[in-house]
Image (cartoon, rainbow, N blue to C red; front, side, top):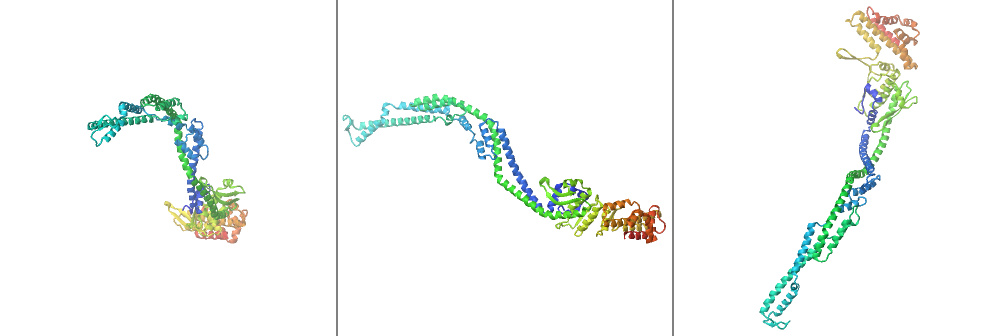
Amino acid sequence: MSTYRPFLSYSELGALIDGKPSELHDALHNLLGLGPLGEAQERLRVTRKRLADDARAVGATRRALRTELADVDDDRVVRAAALLKPTAPDLAAVAELVAGIDDGDGEAPALAALASLPVPDAATVAATTGRVRAAADRVHVLAGDEVRSADEVAALLRGALHHHDGRAAITCPVCEQGTLDEAWREAAGSRAEALEVAATELRQATSELDAAVASAQGLVGPLPAVLEVSPPVDVEAVIGAWSAWVEAGRTPGAAELAHALDRAHAPLVEATDDARKRAQEELTQRDEVWVPIARRLSAWHDDAARVAAQAPRLAALQKAENWLTAAAGELRGERLAPFAEESQKVWQLLRQQSNVDLGPVRLDGTKTRRRVEMDVRIDGTDGGTALGVMSQGELHALGLSLFLPRATVEQSPFRFVLIDDPVQAMDPAKVDGLARVLADVAATRQVVVFTHDDRLADAVRRLELSATVWEVQRQERSVVEMRRSDDPVKRYLEDARAMASTKELPADIRSELVASCCRSAIEAACHARIRSVRLTRGDTHAAVEAAIAEATTTHKKATLAVFDDPGRGSDLLGRLRSVGTWAVGALQNCKQGAHHGLTGDLRPFVRDAEQLADWLQT
């Protein structure tokens, strides 16, 4: 119903030309079977536009960010602005900058390192140096002269005991004076055990002291690298304190080491705390500027990365859309050609005595600018001006030229067309053209036309075209009555006979009505004769209708029909007498009876009027 719509109402007839251009475009587009191509183009366009809009938005954001960052005094911001300068920025470098791997000149990492510079806490240092002192004191207590040689003396005694094994009493082999007997053996064994215990305790204390010293020296590290790269805050005090801390860690002697560390630690903590505080303040100040920008830069980076990943798809979509648009245009031209040719044929029949030419019909535009381009010219003037000065009848004829080819294509499942009042506003010449066009359509279609204008029916009869005319009348209580009305002369005469037989009507009224119907029948016969003679001769429809309009009485109409000369009115009755006195009587009774009524039997009068109407048309 939408594609092959067979109905054309009067309002739609005008809308075909002055309605929404896109509606006619879409109707013809679907009629040509191009709907699927249009749908595919639209899907490609929507997807391509979404990706292109994303890319444009990313580009616009990049330009806006770069403009905003131009006057910000921050090393990372300056670096970000430089990265955003190219149309296709280095996204990896942007990601590194946002992540802190690359901050422009490296100051931010240095400040961060300084703000978190590690220093042993006071409790750890105190515990470590206390351990050194305790270990040193124990070694001092244990390390007497006898204990220092305890291992040697114990070894000597063990050698002597071994030498004495298995012997009762012998002279000392060293001094050769004392006696090595059982009493000596017991005393020497006890003494050797005591000396070995004392030696072991000293070794353990010495080992603990060595461990404590190593732990104390382990608290001292070299000068941190961040202090050697000139961070953006003053660190001279930290460097001095740290150097003193390093020298303290090199102090010889356990007790001296512990003392040196305790003395150097407090200045180190104070200098480091101050440097850390100043570094953190600098970082905070910088981050107040950088962090919001970094967040926006990060969000832009994610969008830009997504757009970059979609770039191959966008290029493919654009290529596909261009190809499909070109292919659809070629196919549309091929399929539209027969339709446009048929529209031109219809227009040639409808344009009777019009200086308007209709050239090729094209589908043009896309999206919201879809329209049907009609090459309409008036005396060579292009269509833009021509449509504005065409008459309503010409515009309706142009609308029919677009409707009929669309409604009568072979693919249409409807074998009929129904048109509402296409005759309105058409001049008589175009009515003849319309009758011929509809007759051609009727060769393959049932054609139904509703109209209040008798000119189409007159043209059909005069051109001897095959058609059936029905008269529709609404009676009381909206009862609709239809009756066939192939010839207005016959219709008027049938009405005259019907009223002549209606006894319920008063005689005077009945006679006036019968005379009026007979007069109308004779005038209709005169009109048919005048049009036939003059149009066949080549007169224009306008001239013929003007001549009929000037014949204001029945006598003048009959004169024009009989002699084709309105000036021979005085010759009319003589010409009718040559036909028969009945002809003169019929004409006179029609003129007089319509105003004053007739007497007697009306049936012979109706027969004479019918005979006169037949003679007038021959």
